[in-house]
Image (tube, rainbow, N blue to C red; front, side, top):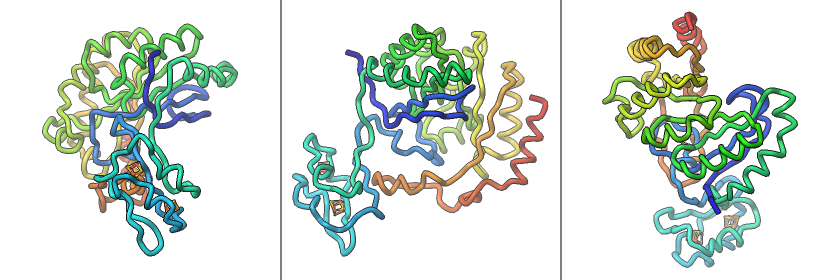
Length: 297
Ligand code: SF4
Ligand code: SF4
């Protein structure tokens, strides 16, 4: 039975493709964009998440950890994410009755997932919607993605994927016929800056987008506006040149927000982009200016 790993399924989405959509979040991503607001999507593995403000300091979790991964503090506990192996027993989760310790990520069969997706069929029909596979990176689990996409096609459900484009071209070619809409992220055109801020070269991504643009599929480019990183005049001009060269005419601008920052600490990860302009909302005047650049599209 084909199984995949997800970290969330959301219903009634309206921003990630046409109509009302079910959003399926895949766990695991090859990129490490410093501004990522879904750090729980990075690792393909299950992870313990500790939501500090919910802790009642009952210390029921402390002694059950076989790896001494939990230390009592005055009014909470400290999780040692190096000691924690996300062990099979996960006794800490059973011990905590306050929703403070949670597991992020779960496996699911394609059969079960299509049943969940199918329950929203009436909304798809009435709104022109469908399902959007996002993440994380859906193409990082190509066999599972292919299987669920085939089931959606068979059921007549409109399919979209949001992708960072970092996958082998063989994987992309396999998936293209099964997808109605690609939401394709383009972040930085300068190769060195791309590597610096996302952890990976953009060569494969640009090659994949170039190939995809020849395949008569609907493509919407998603362009995150990260102050001083992606939203520089130089990068915006480079993105515009790329879109013109490939004949792509649809673009979504995605202004930076810091809404995912707390999740880094909850997962024992470090957020490295503190203090950039826009932490408390992307500057609206700069957004208007950038929208003007893209008006010809
Ligand atoms: S998941 Fe296992 S190793 Fe990690 S804190 Fe809980 S009991 Fe300890
Ligand atoms: S069991 Fe839950 S509420 Fe109690 S100390 Fe541990 S994390 Fe906090």
